[in-house]
Image 1 (spheres, rainbow, N blue to C red):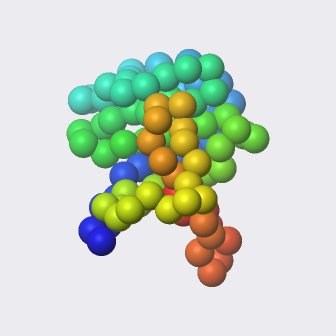
Image 2: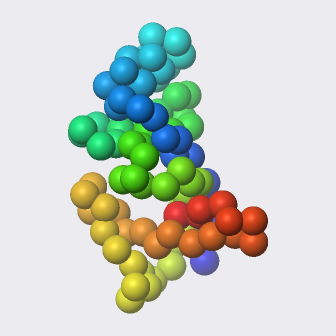
Image 3: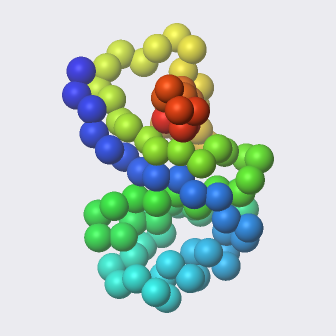
Length: 93
């Protein structure tokens, strides 16, 4: 199994306002996906998810190349995920 950092998710109050802020303040920023409850941005090859409180937890995501576990769920972008917690309670996707 190979692991790779995928993205960090931060909670924001307004997806559109935050998208604009990142686009205006950081060069080489693009929007990969956006809807009313979350957006995925890329800044120089690093992905940041903007999420609304209560829709997704703040987390870091690590991509794994392994068979899809039976308890995995699907995001709207059709990727599979499992939320887990490290010993300190941080959410890992």
